[in-house]
Length: 419
Image 1 (tube, rainbow, N blue to C red):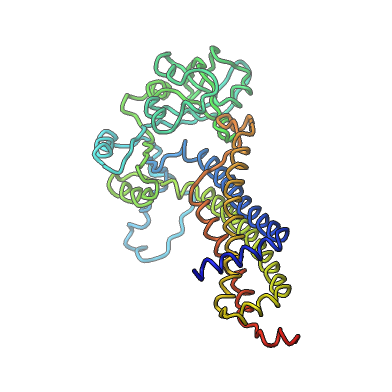
Image 2: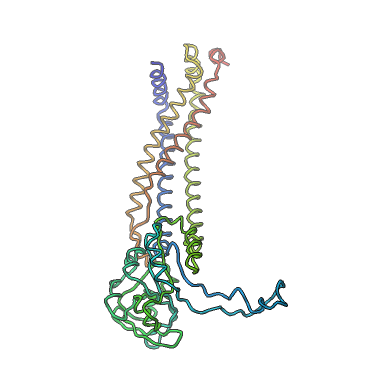
């Protein structure tokens, strides 16, 4: 019964200062809405930018690193053992990029429960030409079906059909900026020259655009068999194996294990793209900082309003205490006022934040650099809404508790005497 009375008194005080109450609730609503909207938009942006990398980057890449022999002939001479030997112009131990025993490696990956899938690949630099125009490029020989399944290859082919690489003999998909520099279109034939001086004609069957312009200016995609023909190699020739894991977080550990098991070089996605992960973390941190600042500012608004209410309601507080209400009762009256403002403002902010996110999510966003994106990216992660709710209620509780504590200590005798 006493609790109901406290709630009724708090409601009466709220109605008595309705305008200030609405202003405080709107402040909380604005803070929560901006917190949810900002985090949703920033997280969507992070997902989009990271997707440009993770969609096309293997979690673990196996390859043969061309590097100098760690054991030089001079180190084997007894006279110089244990000494510091300075050798210049070291030469690589081998220029061969082929992965040895690739079939055994693929069988091992098939049996690995952590592996979602893999795509064998051939990478080779070439000179590509059409008439007098000659440009340096890189041909990627790919398993088309594996690329479509694991790396969303079709999403980035902006013209043509990616499966034509399998069905059309001696075909190629060019990066769109590269095709524009060569002045070629689908159906044209370009000439590819290898480092050995061999030339090979390829028919253009599609255009590719990943959104990373520097890469798109140099890349060409062909089937594995076509790339092997260009290099004059056998059907077992593979230079890379791109692996996707079920859990991206285990990629560093698996790359170390594969390096030891297969005797090849192995690079994980976290190592090769550390700058993107750092950028995402910084953007998210900034979003949280701005959102929390808005909620704290809203809390100060509630604190100021309740402080003013205490000074204006000194007589009412004195009467409440004189009629038998304890200091704790008075404190809870003002805490109820604060929480009421916080809860109403929080609910309004969550709804407003969702609506704002929906509006942003439907705004058209088209750019040649990002062909797969048609609207602004927004994330509707439930965690953002729960964090906003929890933090707004905690903020308003603290903002109400401080003046409520002050009100609970008011001496009614001094107020009634006019002191």
